[in-house]
Length: 267
Image (cartoon, rainbow, N blue to C red; front, top):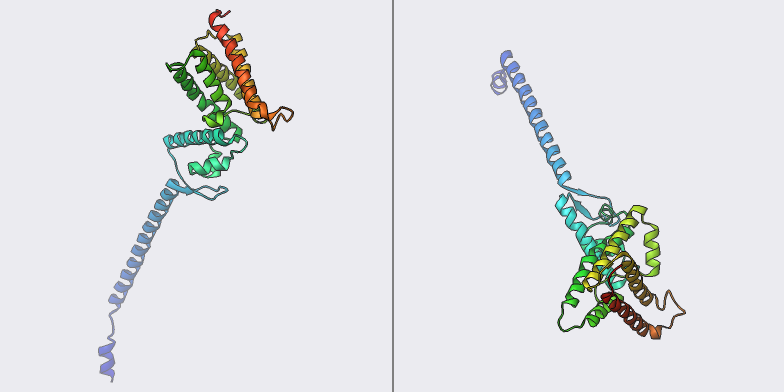
């Protein structure tokens, strides 16, 4: 019986036991080392992932990615373009920030990284449509089938009925709301661009544009556009049944005045 135990569980020399313990210790150290390396690699990968793909806390909880400067510029242009399309079709008051950012495919939080307020976006949409307005003037004035008078009238009609022609026109209430929230600097910039736009329109009409003419044409044009938009909601004492005839009368009066300016040198 004693011999059987010695065969099954032989006595190990002391040096073998020590060597085994040293080997086990080395294995533990190596395993710990490799575990640390794997942990570091995981942290590195996770960090890179979070930098490239991260979530912004927004009202809609939409996932966001890190955008390049080119991507951000493209998205900002899309926001302004979509904003202009919606505002021209359904009016500025009925166009919401949510409608715009959802159509572009970004979150509410990300939208506000481009524009602090809806009013800031509206001003940008008005800037965006200015070159389009000039293109429309040039196209009408170059049409051989139209007389000078008919081309000018068609342009003014297109502006008055902007929702049918992709042109956003501010109501009285919208003007008051927006420009109360603009800084003095932003307001001055808007005024300069507005006067430049109306001056360029006059030049395309073949009329020499000085400051007095630009100011008068701006007021006359905006008056007919705003009055048409205001009947009957904002101006309830006006007769809505005569709204279109009123617009027609005002436009003809403006064209008459512009026609006279064509033959009179600018002062």
